Amino acid sequence: MAPHHDGTTTAAGQRQRPPLAVWPCAQHSGTPPQEELTQRLITDLSAPGDTVVALCHGEGTALAQAAAMGRSVHGIEVQPERVRAAQRRLRERLPAERRREVVHWQADARTAEVLLAPVRGRTRLVLLRLPRAGRHTDAPEATVRGDHFGRLTGAAYARAVQSLIAAAAGLLRAGGHLALICSGHGQVGREADLVTVCAHAAHAAGLAYVQHIIALTTPVSVDATKQAEECGGVPGGKELGAAHAKAVTTLITPCHDDVMLLHKPAAGPAGEAGR
Image 1 (cartoon, rainbow, N blue to C red):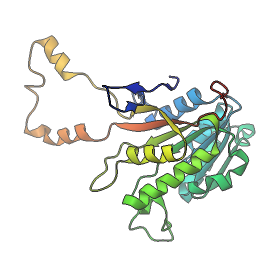
Image 2: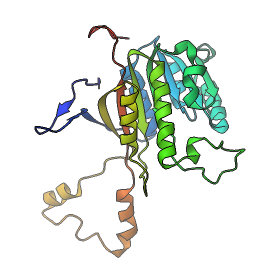
Image 3: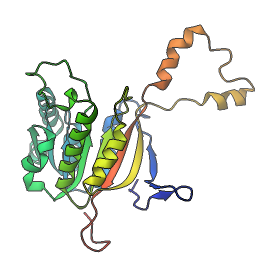
Image 4: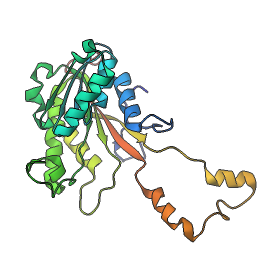
C-alpha cells in the first residue's frame, strides 16, 4: 500500500487525522509478523539501490531483508547479544557480496547522525522499532548502561524518544520516510502514551505524519456472532463457562503494533521529492 499524504478531516472544527490503514500481518503460519511488517515497509517505501537504515535493529531481520532486496543498509543496536545474533543472521541469509552492503554498529542509536554521517541527509527509509521502557531497571550497570532505554521511564523515556526521532530525521533525504514501530504492549501507571509522545517529537523534528498503520500481530479468528446467526443460536451460549475465565484474559492482550509513517518534506517545489 502506498502512503497517503492528504490526511482526513472528521466533523467540522476537529483536527485532521492521518489516514488509517490495517495491515493483516500474522495471518500466514510460519512467518513471524515482525518480519512480514518490515518486509512490506522496505518493499513499499524504498527501491533497489536506495539507502535504508535500521535503528535499534535487534537481531538483524530488517538488515538481512533490505540487503537481500538490493538496498544499501546501515544499522545500530546497543545490546551486544543482539548484535552478535544479527551478525549470525547476515552470515546465514546473505551471500558475501550482499553482506558487503551492510554496515552496522553496536552503539546507542541516538548517536546515529554521528556514526552514520556518510548517509546523513541521503537515507530513503529509516526503520525504527522503539525499545520498551523500564525493562531493565534492576539490571547491573555492566549489563545495561544507566541511560539505556530499558532503564528509563516516564519523562526521561519521553526525552530519550525525542532524541532518537530527531537523530532519525537527520538521516533522511527530502522525500524520505521514517517508519516508527511502537510495539503493542500496554502502558501502565502514569506512563505517557507512546504514540502521542512520538507524534509530538516527529513534529518538532520537522516530519509530517502521513499515515497510521495498525499491523496485526495475531491471527484473525472466526466471528462468533456471525457464526451464531448462521446457526440460529446465541453466540457461544453453550460453550462458555467458569473454565473459560482464564481464556478471557487472552482477548485483551496486545494484538497489533502501531506504525507511524512519517515523511520528510521536500525543500523545493512539490513533486521534486522522489527516490
